[in-house]
Amino acid sequence: MKPYTYRTIIEKDGKYFHGYVPALLGCHTCGKTIEETRKYLREAIELYVETLMDMKEKVPEDKGVESIETIFMPIRKSYA
Image (cartoon, rainbow, N blue to C red; front, side):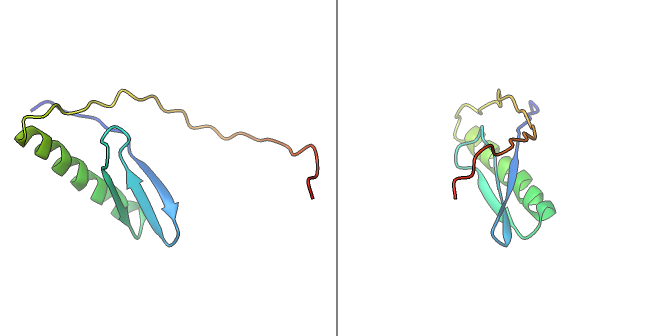
């Protein structure tokens, strides 16, 4: 079986963490911790890809590019 690589994004969502896979439309999950969410994402990806294969559908490849950057923007004016 061909190996697939997918970017995952995990964000804080209230008390929990929301995780999703940009290349797999609708592939979302949540967990109480980042580790739990990461585990659930792996399971969701596996199920998603296996379902597509069972249905003889094309499996999307992740062709996205990611850039993580911290940008400092001083506030020049006061809007109060």
